[in-house]
Length: 374
Image (cartoon, rainbow, N blue to C red; front, side):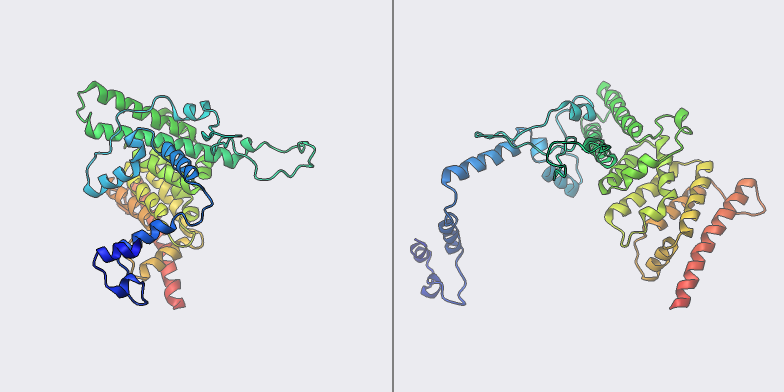
């Protein structure tokens, strides 16, 4: 059949016979694929159709916004338009939706059932008990492990940020006019969702709670996960300018800069975090600026941070690294607050002068050491 079709297309005799070195005709290649795709014979045509039907039903729910989300989102970013807009918002809180749902199963016509992967009800990969069904004394159930709780919190937060993105798209397209009732309702729901996520991370949601949060262990555990760092970056970018949780997140990053930006080559996730923190520092007050700068000075003292900044600058790279972006954000905020490093000036000017002098002494000291080693 392939040879007959090739003759109809007017192919030379050498090409139709598959001579070595001859370029195959596209029609011949297609016919070869058609003839050889069922060569294995391990599955019947009915079994193949059933598998295709299962895959089609799981991927086509009737909601175009859900089915073609990634394609439409990339297309909107390429043409710089907002067209991938949902028809409506999902109801209820993401945490309540996730906890209220039972473990799903794949819809199959046959014996047994295949459970769908569920982060809230994971299954142990191996049972290391004695085989008599006894539970080891003092052993914690898998659901109570702290890292699993952090992963569940990250998944809930990412679902919540998807709802925030949907609200932003609706506000930018359908309800952009502030006088509309729907605009006020969507803004109120957006604020409620962000405050709910901040409360789950033990971050302040109002100015009255700004000084109440003294421990950042929960945020550190979340940010130790790669997806958790993405969550915190998106949260910081979505917060309003005067939200009290923004300076707290910036302070956590400044205090633990040696942990976040010292692990070898900088990843796009770390670069996005540094850019967002540098932009978020534009909303801190003078006292918070001094505290964050002192934290950065302490982080730069640690081994590796200052050297990484200098080494990146000496290699001629135009893109800034994470610590340098944060330092530039601090200096830009000081310029906006009209702070001058004057040892003979006011108390604020003297304090700022000491911080800036200590910071640049560390950077210049690292530069001297690197140049001497070369």
